[in-house]
Length: 220
Image (cartoon, rainbow, N blue to C red):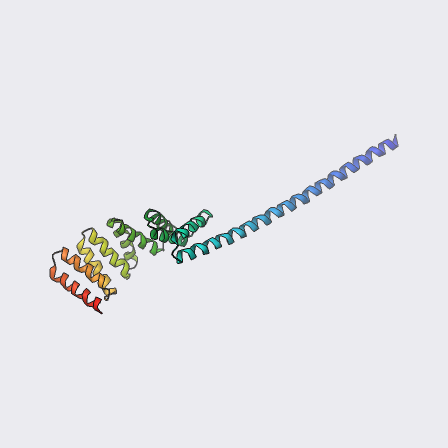
């Protein structure tokens, strides 16, 4: 009886020992799996960053080479990969505009500005798109917003004058063209535009002076 009891006790002890060893094994296995998962996560994050950088460089290279359609594909790929960068959206807008995809360009420029409120170039491009698409009222809104922050940009003032002229707001057009001339007096085109505006106002002598100045500048 004593031997049987001893045997049972030994088996019980061995069972407990085996259970403990198994628990230890599974604990170590879990730690190893957790470590592998962490390593995988770190690795995939590194690969994702590197992949995004490669796509970004490829997109920029294609854009700089004038291959705008291919660049659009790469910029959209970057966005699908999770990049929310205002420069990417601005470049996408630029490429879309070059490809005649004005609606897509407008969306991209708006997103760029949404991500970076200091990105004046995006607002400027939106203004130019509005002029191109015969929406001078919207163009005035965008370009006026820029002049409120910085009224020393020739391009902004010139195109604001064009937008006012299209709206038949001739006094404001004259004002914008004159400000542009003060910044860049040697640009003949702005003198011509001012001349046309004066002519529309019935100020023929002033118009002739502007046309004369434009011709002088073109002969230089």
